[in-house]
Image (cartoon, rainbow, N blue to C red):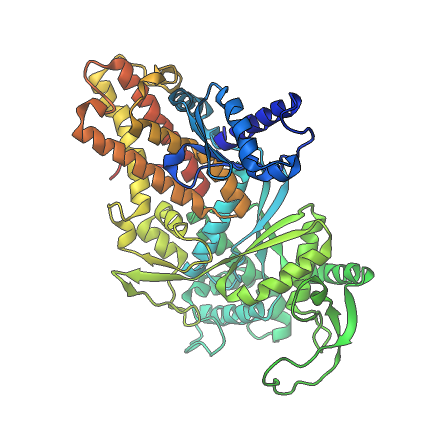
Length: 584
């Protein structure tokens, strides 16, 4: 249950009651009424702006509405007290009994706790990674892969019908470069001394197996053939081999996408022309001449008539060309067609996850999506760079030279779960430092350790400490859910329960904002609240989770910490991280 959504309903019910008895006018619009945590936690558990936003409609002052609404809210059994503050804000404090019974609700919900119907089953396409298939994944791809995957999980948790997609960029000049690089390794497989890799080709050793596979499959068929004969074949073989490598790398990171869309198919099927024609029929395409670029005019620039997308009509700075001087379509035209294809597949809501080097391309793509249809929406999320460090010193990489840090090297050294969690400890558009040594520290300063340690501690109590003290106690979820939860009365216990209960709201807010890092932040705060109570128990024996001669209290506290473990596990599942049951 989202506590805040629930009590928004309570507030609306009280307002409706006031309208029914004539204290307020009928027909008030509640759409701007909110129930949220108060800015200052000392003011209570909930705050509503109802009186402030309804005053104009009701033709009275906010304070007058608040004075009517407060007594009506106090009649709710779950609300302990109501206070009118300032010009008409209303703060509410919920009863301990309300919070106590939420422990049982979390246990009953299990893996479904925090799930929401907010998305209403709306189809959403999340396209992420989409690295050029020219080599193995490197660390520069990791952040976008983790972000896109966690965002997809988050949206699914919030009730959306999500498709995880990868666009294979297999139609550009980089694929010809890949094919020529692989062909060089093919010649090498026959014993030819190829010397140093020529400038402009991919030098990585990862292409050696591709050359050997070409030899195995085709023998010496292509050794003395013209480039025009072997290039189309090697292009496909090399691309397929790189995509197999990429899929394997992504799987090591825990990323498995349902759809792999080939850009080449857009060109071969004529769908680019179809998309442009669709936009033309609606007046968004025209033949015209662009103004020269601002500043220094590029060498060889001359005005010429081009096929242009009327991007300025949708908020862009200039109209955008769709065809080159040789008649080939621009990358932008292909991207329009790709998003048009998504829309035709039923995805009216689309999310693209791009690297920092594509920031300048965002505006034109968003304007193009607006032109596709009135109900087409594209949100582009930029993932800023990751700076790799070791003991604070930069670890350099260069994909061009072949001396880069691969995704596999990162995962093999620190583990999939650590890699994923750390990549979500900053908002996607903020740079992130990844220090190999620090992410493995066992300290409060390492968020993934701190959260996992909380889960492991709870598992240890349930697995070891409780059975030692009470060997006959049934500690299954079904049994401890029936504990005397009213015994959870310490302020620190109530605070921990409140933190757990914030999870459904965090899920919905994070999904709405497309910000999965909020889940990582929430988990750290929840772990901190748990560790704080653990430490308090070390100082005060009567607050320990397992106490002597207190089986009823113990059972209630086991229910409470098991609820914490469920929330942690559910949050980690969104991030794609497996909760640990013991620290090694």
